Image (cartoon, rainbow, N blue to C red; front, side, top):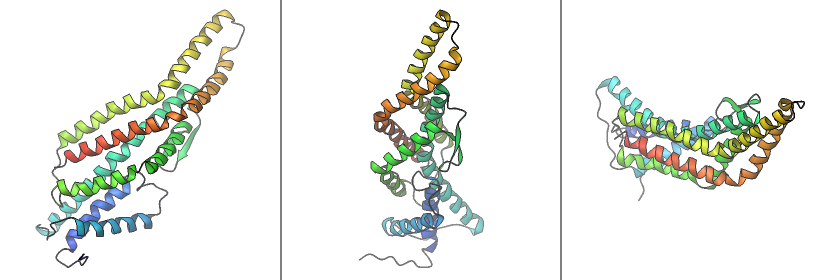
Length: 260
């Protein structure tokens, strides 16, 4: 028989579960999108917390001394949920970085637009790719993996059991910065290679026919070539998403390992 009763002695334990889940929901990809209503996020956090309260065993009372001790536990649970969600969310910056480089190569870097998902100014290509990646995240059930990762953390990091290894966490984020450059330039490589070949051709044409205005011609050719390459490489989006989702899984595991 499933018992969802919450007594006064275990209410604090349930609230700590709610703090971690709500912090995760606030920042995690798909769950923490800015266009999602706040009531939906709150209701989802409470619903998941009720289920976890029954699933996470053993339950018991929290041991703390005074208001400061209770505040420290709340802070630890909030930081744990934020770090897990941030580890998954930060991987979306790979596609944004690639989009900015592509826009610089094809001449669209001046055409910036406001991205409501990240609440920042983003290029056209980065915003387009970001929406595609989020769509593939839902199609491939990656959001289920992220939620299961949060649930599994209670087996390794129980309530009030987080021990932050700052060296391990710093190493994880430094490794991510290197991976972001590598994966980002892999995404940019087709556009970058074609743009470099076009620049070489325009340089030769400028020497052969100096009477032509290669600046005016080159700007139009770069935009046309860039859109053509983006259209031809759109079939590579599942492979791009695979790179990003693999990095997302690695970051979640690495960050969790730095908290127990």
